[in-house]
Amino acid sequence: MSASSVAARRYAKALYELASESKQVDKVRADLAELAKTFETNAELRALVENPAFTPEVKKKAIAAIGARMGCAPILLSTLKLLVDRRRLGALGELSEAFAAIAERKSGRVRAEIITAAPLPDAYYAQLEKTLNEVTGRQVTITKRTDPSIIGGVVTRIGDTVFDGSIAERLKDIKQQLLEKAAPSAR
Image (cartoon, rainbow, N blue to C red; front, side, top):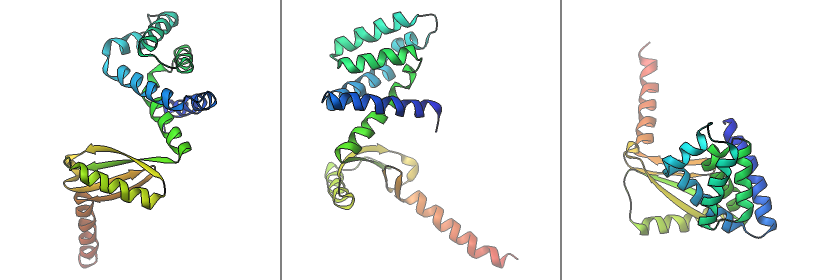
């Protein structure tokens, strides 16, 4: 785990506690996700924040202006200014993900990443979400991702648990079994 990930989790935990006290968890989560997306997609903003030629005050003013225009929660803006001071604003995406994970865990929800080789019908995802809700006993939020390298099947990731039902994984298992069977006869 990288140092920025560890720092992002610490900031996310502190921000969550502040947002929880002020009953603004959902607002801060949405604002943070939108800011992280803006930061990721706007090269000019990233250049401003990452350029050491700009003073922290200039960076804070830019972040405050963007946050005000977006209607961000004041506690989030204060956190962003702290991140500027500590030179951690580059970890905004990780902070957003960590905050969302904490918020989901605290609310009894869990996120499941579903990876398929090609997009599947929405009805499939709805049925899968229903099944995962029953299996986990928690409210599951599905995020979809495609990865042609899995060839077919589905890979489901819930937290640290991975259910790999991909064809690529099955082929790897078959290859390993064949190698194990062939190894004793090669002697």
